[in-house]
Every structure is written in structure tokens, then in C-alpha cells.
Length: 104
Image 1 (cartoon, rainbow, N blue to C red):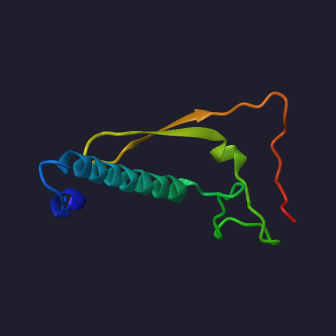
Image 2 (cartoon, rainbow, N blue to C red; image 1 turned 180 degrees about the horizontal axis):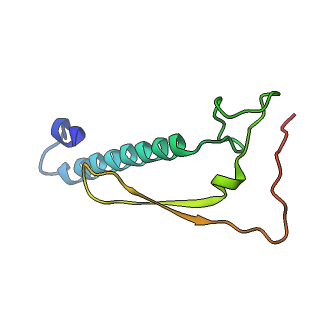
């Protein structure tokens, strides 16, 4: 909401549509960034390059939690100024075993 209250769109009648389109894209990127941060905060583990210093092994490797976070997340938009709904779909692996990785 603050973005749209304070946004300044430059230009005149000849190029205003392009400027408005660009402002909309910036707003989309900001909303997407906020959602990525929300998703990262909810994830109570480290996995691959998604490293969280609060979840690491004694050797400072990523500490996975496959029991609680072996899923795909999708976030449902519920409107402006309301929290999105987090949907989870479990992942099942038939041919591979999930293991703790080492990048050393």
C-alpha cells in the first residue's frame, strides 16, 4: 500500500503508459521479494544454498529437516493488506534416499 501511496510516475501523455507499466513491475518485484522472505523465515532448516545460520551442523554445514520440510510450497494471494495462504504438497521419493549433504 505504501508503494502506491508514494510512487511518482514521470512522463507525459506520450510515454505515461510505459512508465505506469514499469511502476507496476517494480511493485510486483517488491511483493515477490516480501513473499520470498516470508517463505524463508517459515523454513526452520538449511537446505543447499538456502543456508540459515540458526540451522547448521557442528561443522557449519546446512542442517536439513526432511521430516518437516520435504514439500513444495505454493502461496495463495488473498488480496491487498492480507496475509497469503501457505499451501504445502508433500514430496515422495521412490528412487533416491534423502541424506545430509556435505559441501566440504
